[in-house]
Image 1 (cartoon, rainbow, N blue to C red):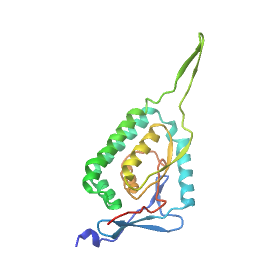
Image 2 (cartoon, rainbow, N blue to C red):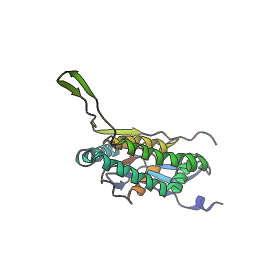
Image 3 (cartoon, helix red, strand yellow):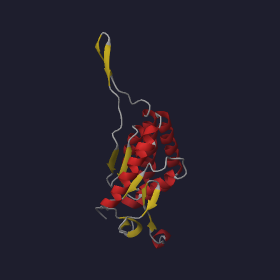
Image 4 (cartoon, one colour):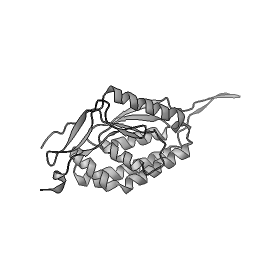
Length: 217
């Protein structure tokens, strides 16, 4: 028997304000490896109270830290994150495969490279988000400025959580926005990657809100 089947399930937690924590209720969800039918990990079963905590942390980071950063600094953070993901690509691909059943060839050769490229893409866009200038007369003009409104929630489906999370999160970070995310347990691994970087404290909030369904054998 595969030794990984005999290992006790890994335990993952929510990450709110750069702090790992279980669900307030203490409830957990079991993650089943589709290839073995065995529980290989548990994640918090988050509810409204946990989401409220994440929103509070995200708003604090938005108001006091992230939105104050110059565009080139935000771009630098995204590029460093891309390199952290690159360094942990094999590990993240394995977690993605065990979590939802995608074959390892797809997650290794397509999903993880796509995550890295999307992070670089939006890093390049961070200082190119401009408004419009409209000449309305010989001596006057109007102009528009793009500004973040506040906290947003990024809901990520089960089929390709890491890839979809990467493109959504990179976009909002390029825009100075701050997100409260409902993701799967792979997000905790990404946060562990963040820990090796000087990311701004309290900027991220990863949560598992609902157990994904796996259809098929």
